[in-house]
Amino acid sequence: MDAPNQDINLNSPNKGLPGNMTDVPVDTPASGDGVGVLSEAETEELKSELTKVEEEIATLRQVLVAKEKHASEIKRKLGLTPFNELKQNLSKSWHDVQASNVYKGASEKVEDLNKTITQSEVYKKTQATLSTAGSKTSNAISSVGSVLSRTLGEIKESPTFKSFEESVGNLKAKVIGNENNSKDGYHTPTATSPSAEETLPQDSAPF
Image 1 (cartoon, rainbow, N blue to C red):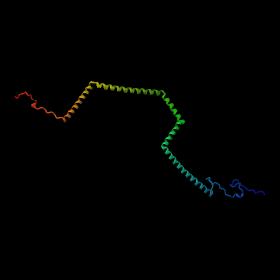
Image 2 (image 1 turned 90 degrees about the vertical axis):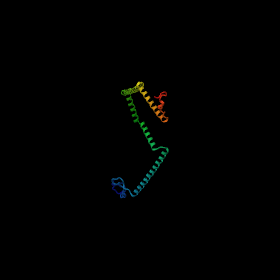
Image 3 (image 1 turned 60 degrees about the vertical axis):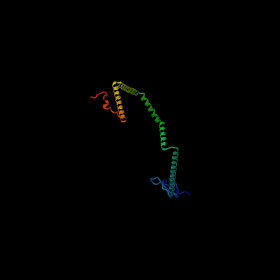
Image 4 (image 1 turned 90 degrees about the horizontal axis):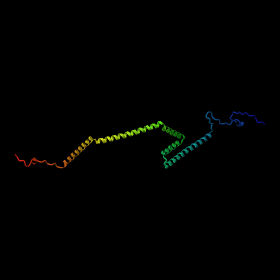
């Protein structure tokens, strides 16, 4: 017995299914959001899975905090302070910079530039000029010092200076002598002056 002909709609979501299953609903994506309509059981299952994942994330965060605390304690025992770590990081960074091709190339260019400048005629003439000026300045200062020394020596040997020096010495001696006499006057009695009768000659006769 031949099977009855059945019309099959190729655009139907139930295509290829037997005729007795064409009435079974098929989940189709909702328009616009790309998410299919979930059944109540699937929704509960996904909620349960989401809760489990969030709990795992919270647990991992707690483990991470504990690990960071343990690492900080180890660093403290080793004397690795944040400042020391910063110094080490900077030192490593500087070492990496020096080892880089860019730094090496820049250093070579600077050295070549330095050689070019120091070997140029302009630099040599400038250096010679500065050296000559320095020597002349030093000689001038030495000459001034010699002239001043010689002038002072001549002044000291001059008769005027010697006379002035003697006057100062005499004045100093007088001042010191007066001070000594004043001090002696306070401690020693003054001598009595002779009377008029004692000063008269003994052989003088009265009129």
